[in-house]
Length: 67
Image (cartoon, rainbow, N blue to C red; front, side):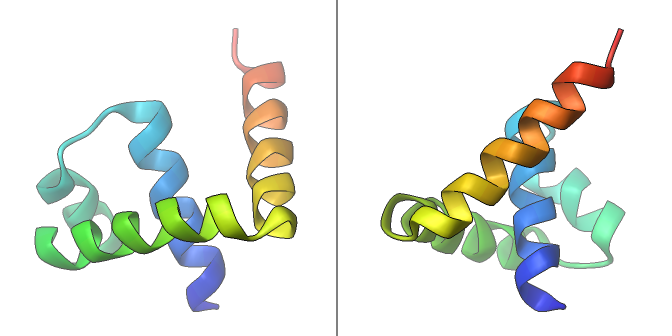
């Protein structure tokens, strides 16, 4: 699902601090597509409480299992 992929792209960007080109390689996309996704996700997370909650839950879960 595109929405889940976009959230995953955003999470990778926020947590791994990789350049857009590298994230693009991981997802089989161009750096420019990643840039558009990140721009959209920054706006959506601010405006959609359910998306913010999903992001927070995933981030908390990932941080909880990392050494």
